[in-house]
Length: 226
View (tube, rainbow, N blue to C red):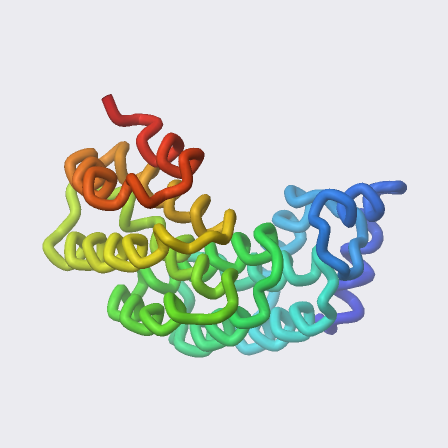
């Protein structure tokens, strides 16, 4: 499948009037086709099943390079699966290459979900996110938290999982003075999810660092704590 064929399939699903609505909502200057996310998900799933890994990687990169909102989401969905055989190294490399280009939450979050799968497949890759936490790009800094969200959700984490959990909490501690709303929101999101499975670590973090968080972030982080 070529990029143009994929774009034609997306355009065929466009809803009249929706591109302008999406542009106003996302507030990022890029083309919008007006295709709903469930439709993109269905198309990407069909393409994943029909294409070889090499073909999927090429299509994903080509769609990403169009800078079209729906095309970038489809690119991320092409690489969103638990197991990529025979080797997921090229998929992980491609996702990492996209991170510096993140400029909006919706596209960034879909790509981050693809990244989460690759981190779960090889947790040692978390090491590669350390440099992201010092990036000038707020979306790159944010991606370090969003991609590691799976480590907030284990009810029975192994020692290695707890090491990653504590490492990311260290990153979050470095973010609490960041004035960017999306960074504060990401810290709150990580802590809120962690509180459902590890309230002790969440309380300890908030006791030490909560006073420096924005009030809305502090409230959201502790939403599920007694």
